[in-house]
Image (cartoon, rainbow, N blue to C red; front, side, top):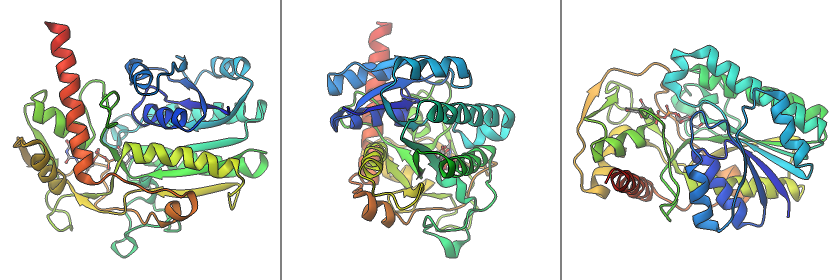
Length: 347
Ligand code: WQD
């Protein structure tokens, strides 16, 4: 059974990917500094798969501590690297923390790839590497020229891609860069989902927390953009579809199908949805009328972007199956579940 190190294993996409890896015959070791996640996700993974995850609570900026993981698991053949700070707005407020955290952890991991001859490296990249694409370039393909990132978060993803590309040229390891669009929703079992610590920044957890009353109201950041209804347009993709693509990416590398030392894939649904359309879909699914008001633009926001995902579909055999209604329904069911658990603990 091939052993894979999943960094950020207690996080949103990391936990969903561990489930998919287990379900497809891989063994997994998780590492997370738990600064922005809890081990609660490991319980959910066990509930779904029946498996305990071997977990290390380690800060990847600590090279010595990171090396220990590889010393104790010399049979790690691949790494899926999720661990990073990832809020566009926040990165504009604390840029140095974003550059330090996202870049030092990546560089430490690549040093371990070399020292322990790890064969496969899958990187959690982002559509933010495209910057604000010109309207004629939307939907973006993997060949769409990148533009200066609109936020320090996006810049760390652009730099991460460059570091890995250059590293792969001189390493025995093969890499893949997966450019996520907007991962949303929760596992259909309702055992795992997005658990933002503190006030959420991403749209869908803000929607579900407003709907359940954790937040008194929410804002739509910007109503004067050049889009069909004035609000920003994004490509929302279910987290389980994203997770599936990671297992397929590993299998693609293991079977030697990669075209270069560092192939790139867009992971989006291929459908553009505006903020207001996402809200309307949520209200239709949940039956809850959301308390929102139109607010000013948010710094770092891209106006509009969605994916041409044909390359991932044809090369990885990827077949996204959840639509925007499924995304909102599973996100809402998850919010209801964690609220019920929290009420039960208070009782
Ligand atoms: C989406 C839209 C906001 C909150 C995300 C991830 C990033 C990367 C790309 C993977 C924007 C609007 C939000 C709110 C709002 N994914 N919004 N009110 O910025 O597209 O980035 O996808 O790597 O990691 O963060 O996602 O959910 O923050 O914003 O109007 O209260 O919703 O302005 O237009 P974003 P988001």
